Image 1 (tube, one colour):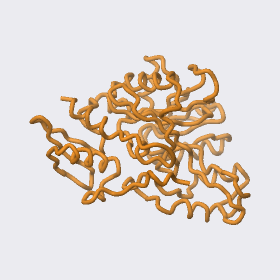
Image 2 (spheres, rainbow, N blue to C red):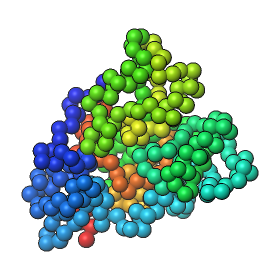
Image 3 (cartoon, one colour):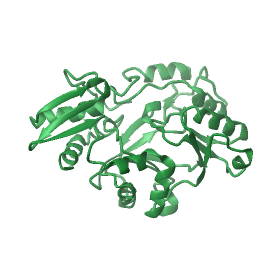
Image 4 (spheres, one colour):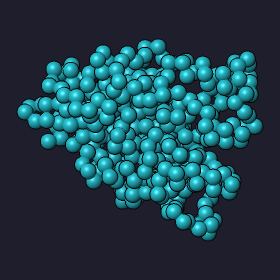
Length: 333
């Protein structure tokens, strides 16, 4: 059950902004700095500090990150080349372009992951693919959202988001994939409806609703379940493998529990692209094992770093990360 102390209250007068932007606006107002709303629909604001103007888009996109750093992080295939230069572990895979050949797919090892090269929020990402039929279907779906598609080895483990600001880790969230817990009475469909109460359909809410889509159906089918199945009391079922909050995942704060080794990996990953504000996604195979390069991969770098998961987690502490982000932006010129 969601931690009651982390209930989000919209910022009065700015309710239509995304939560991450609302957090930055609240910090700007707290510091009594001049604020201008340039385009509310696009979460575009300006703040003046020491006679200089700073433009901020979606709460974290600003001059703090250079154009080249943003460009590198926005291309998942390009990101790999920069991670490799820094000796950071990542999933091995292939890049497909329109008109790819069947021979290229013969290189794929199962289980596999398919993702568009440049989309955000888990759009058209398929995880833990085990058959050639599902692979082709996932690739075709990904091509609807991008001109290039990555197919990579599936790395089993738990996914964490490290918020790195000025090359320091300021917060860490375990991103648990969308899930429901049975009560012996309600169907999976009904459990989803219950869990969705208080969640939103866009980023004006910290947590988003779970939608039953093609990936959820595929995942349930692999478990011999359907949305109408009734789960035994206390049984947790994951509805998909990817853990994006945009697809109904839960954020659980683990900032105080993460080994220093992985914090250093996250910082090195941010440095690989020159990102001063970054959300770094790591999958860690076994948290109980001695930290090593074989026990993790960096999944991707995110220049637009969603902050609300760290201030309003499903479980855990509010890390008040907006103050570090604003400091970084105001010191970028």
